[in-house]
Image (tube, rainbow, N blue to C red):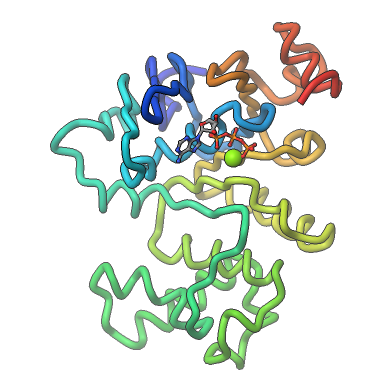
Length: 254
Ligand SMILES: Nc1ncnc2c1ncn2[C@@H]1O[C@H](COP(=O)(O)OP(=O)(O)OP(=O)(O)O)[C@@H](O)[C@H]1O
Ligand SMILES: [Mg+2]
């Protein structure tokens, strides 16, 4: 992986919650327009790491970060970094679908409205494009004024993806996006991730080894706050360099 195609680069990233260190000297590159999976046992720092990428940990009291997180070559932790712009460029989808308690339309128009788009025609287009890109349009066309809370869990998760896409990010962070979903909805989200990587850089945290193997181009293995090994997914799964990676992948722990 050359520096040029690395859109996100973490350099010696350390993070503490109070006195407890949750990330230890994490250095890794995330290439553009690829899917990078983050795997590792519960509590190893996967969510903490991806939350660093859009400065979500800023919201946590007593959280301290050292090191650099470069996005497009600039450190997002620089004192003059624009956090609103960073969160617009780096969207996030969570484990539990979290639609806002409002209509399907308003969920997707929410971000663009916050960013100043008022024109009805323009908003209509953004909503339609978002729903189409998230493979939900066919299921909800004609009922955009229905509450998003009336959708199924799998539909709600695709709605959350559409909501993320509507603000035109470069990067999408997925934190176990399928763990609350049934197998059919999971397959839909996995297909969607395969489509989205044409236009977006994707990082996905997953506990599901088959899912990591199916959807990702690169895989990073974390253990106890350290990034142990990063490589092409096929290599990590078939021929890992580190014993702890192999132990985890073969189910010997975690
Ligand atoms: N808001 C927080 N305040 C204090 N400690 C936290 C906080 N969030 C996470 N931690 C701690 O940081 C460590 C890493 O947690 P993190 O949630 O990043 O792990 P994870 O790999 O995502 O785990 P899981 O697979 O269970 O989601 C854990 O020891 C956890 O208890
Ligand atoms: Mg987590």
